[in-house]
Amino acid sequence: MKMIVCVKQVPDTAEVRIDPVTHTMIRDGVPSILNPEDANALEESLRIKDRHPGAKVIALTMGPPQAQAMLRECLAMGADEAVLLTDRAVAGADTWATANTIASAIRALGGAELIFVGRQAIDGDTAQVGPQLAERLGLPQVTYVQKLTTLEDGLLQVERRMEQGYEVLRVRTPVLLSAVKELNAPRCLSILGICEAYEKEIKILSIQDLDITPADTGLNASPTKVYRTFTPKTERAGVLWEEDAGRMAGKLLTALREKHVI
Amino acid sequence: MSVSQSASSSQNVWVFAELRDGVLAPVVMELLGEGRKLADTLGHKLCAVLLTGSSDSRLHSQLAGYGADRIYSAAHPLLAHYTTDGFAAVLTELILQESPEIVLFGATHVGRDLAPRIAARVNTGLTADCTSLDIDPETGNLRQTRPAFGGNLMATILCPVRRPQMSTVRPGVMDKAVFLEGRSAEIIPICPALKEEQIRTQLIQAVSETLHQVSLSEARVIVSGGLGLGGPEGYELLKKLAGRLGGTIGASRAAVDAGWIDPTRQVGQTGTTVKPDVYIACGISGAIQHLAGMKGSKIIIAINTNREAPIFEVADYGLVGDYKEVIPAILERLERTIS
Ligand SMILES: Cc1cc2nc3c(=O)[nH]c(=O)nc-3n(C[C@H](O)[C@H](O)[C@H](O)COP(=O)(O)OP(=O)(O)OC[C@H]3O[C@@H](n4cnc5c(N)ncnc54)[C@H](O)[C@@H]3O)c2cc1C
Image 1: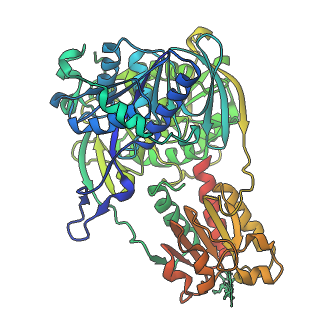
Image 2: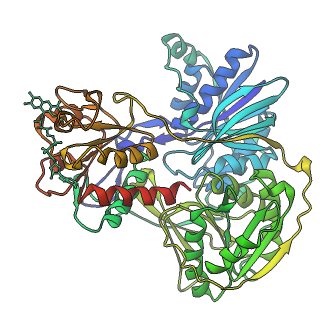
């Protein structure tokens, strides 16, 4: 089985701070990491490979050249190949344009039986690229996958996380799945894996290698535009509220959601 | 590759009427409340789109009561359960046929599965998990505001050219529409031509889960109660909150000494040291021995009637109030969000 895992390098948003004077985001010194739920998607693909020798796992990312560091990490975890799609023409793409571009890269790689993505990236939190990619590739999708079992010849059984429970679904490959963190605990990097990762080559693609044109990707092709950004009036850590219970409850839940704790 | 619609011919504000076990998900009322404002500003109609296994007049009168001027009601046996393929096919066809100006979905597990699939198919923009929506008075465009970077930044997004403008909206944020008994709506019945082969996922089972008890040291969320609970029955409320958040309950020594709760639940110097993601201290003063066992928690929330209580000094979020009022308010809002 051939599997392509779509991964993204993201700033560790838990480390992002707001400058108290300029009210802008301080990104200097914020570590870049493999998006956590993409690590779950990669881990699950590697587990399938462990069970089915001969299966192949390709880590694919679209991003700046620095994203190679993250791809090395994917290789060290056990991915067989790593592919970086990097081109100025793709910069500023929204989810629609990103999905067009990644779909094209997947076609350039000859497609796969399983396309695995993380549910959402922690910088944008949209959870849109997975389904949009499935649409572009004409594949069925199952999002919020918390458990995966491979049945006989190309039949998968998956649990799809819902707000209060889950659904058990069956679907045939080729298919796109999106992973949630409940799916597994990603493996640690081994010394051997890290050494081997540096011997593997990272394949670099540019838009010339794809079946799309600059009109299908990047900032200008994106249907959505960022009109403005601003820092929220976040209550500083250590806030004290003394008001109506309902209002305090609302503020608390909003704050907890922003921090991804609920 | 684009077959998207131009801005000039489109009209009306649509709301996807998501169902949970056959009843309207609470977010639908919130979408109708918000959709009403947008539709009124634009001078458009507010329309609900309902997909069901068979036509359901009870749902029609509810949607009408909550303010829908028009209801597109698609009924087909293959729409009895949510499937990405079935719902995306029917909604896409309807959107292409009717050219709405705006389409709103709840940012639920269904909405966030369905909306991007449709947005890709009709080649329009989609903004995820919006917390505020309004109309730009000059251009008439929808301004969609949402958090990014873990809530460190807010971004306002526009979809200036393509139509419809699509958003998923975070549950529990917008005000619910007010229900008016006897309001009527224009019903447009739709008989979709769906075939079994179009639906490529097969539902084997739907499981609803009630969360079980977790041990103190492993819990990600601990809701802890002290003498301020006033009696053992206070823990019932705490258990409810813990259950909702996938956590467990803890206690101060004073509450244990009072015999209100099992000693295994004690947090502190002489109890268990805990480091959960979230620690919620209810009716706990914050004695140094208690703090010793929980101050390593990632986020500390304190609910206490006394604004001078030392627990507030270590709390990230301090709520001055009676836990008997504050916890039910939290539960009520969580309920809205979850369903
Ligand atoms: C050697 C030693 C070891 C100890 N080890 C521990 C330990 O491991 N763990 C531990 O917890 N303690 C320990 N203690 C005890 C500790 O000193 C405190 O006595 C104890 O923690 C107080 O418990 P409390 O906060 O529940 O009660 P109190 O101090 O009586 O506080 C009750 C709080 O509830 C608030 N309240 C009242 N009504 C309401 C309401 N309706 N809604 C909201 N808030 C309300 C009040 O404002 C007050 O702040 C130890 C003490 C000693 C001497």
